[in-house]
Length: 283
Image (cartoon, rainbow, N blue to C red; front, side, top):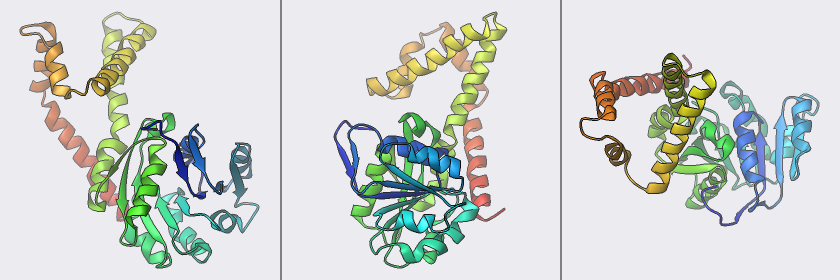
């Protein structure tokens, strides 16, 4: 959570309980968070639904053994989180539409499925907000992009923001920027892990054991990130303080700059953005 202040949310239903839904659920089960009316969830697998039902405050049903599972989950829910695979979304929305009460907020966690698709398949009395969380939400350090639909209110956006702030930071953007956001924060953890992977390999090549290299590199990334957040300084300023004139760090940074690292990141994130648009178009 981004704040220690108590959070109170209305009844919530999760349709689909994959890794991202479970990350959000973990935030809702954290101390200081209250969900009035309880948390409901559905999953295709009876075994996974059973795991969820074993958690305090969650009632879960399996669609493979209960044809009415999704209807049970959404009935009386103020917030419905759609977290199934994108290809499953249209049929699911057609299935639950009649069970949604007027004023329900449907939050999409389905990558690539537009707000217009949701709104076209749901009753006009239902609001839609599209979200783009990232995997660090699983440890409460996520960054989630939110985009409001044409029928959502400021209150709806506040509810969605409060929901995702239980697992990290929230940035509200127009939907046309959501794919670009995904190319930065959505794919971003993979970029960071790749940098860690390569720097670790460099450490091993200099004679450190894999365990020693992991200590050096993982600790450095964690420490640098913590310093960045706690100091409030811009990364360029913190880099300048580490980079003594004519020193070793300056020489290394010059090599990175000569390799066109900024242009490489531009190209990489542009490629991620292009692929996101292709997926949205069903390619």
